[in-house]
Length: 81
Image (tube, rainbow, N blue to C red; front, top):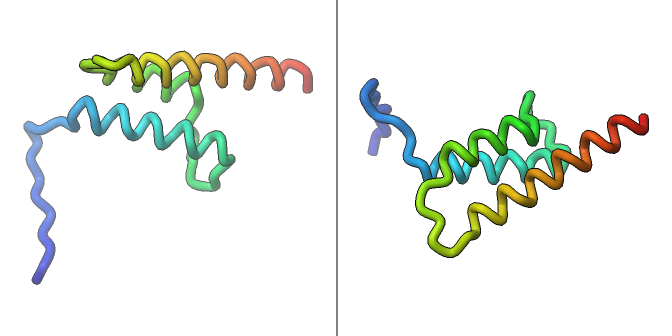
């Protein structure tokens, strides 16, 4: 079976996909992954906010609150160095 790449210039990633990539990015920052690239808590938080979508149980809001605290902690640590 051969795999093919299908390109559709009209399609956009779903809110769920974009939110999930923000969650994965925060995980990479926490682990200090070599694959984190230039990701920052602030940029990932902005992405998560833009892709919040329906948050019936409040889990996405809670993730964003935790990410805000991580960004604040990161700034405080940087200021002490």
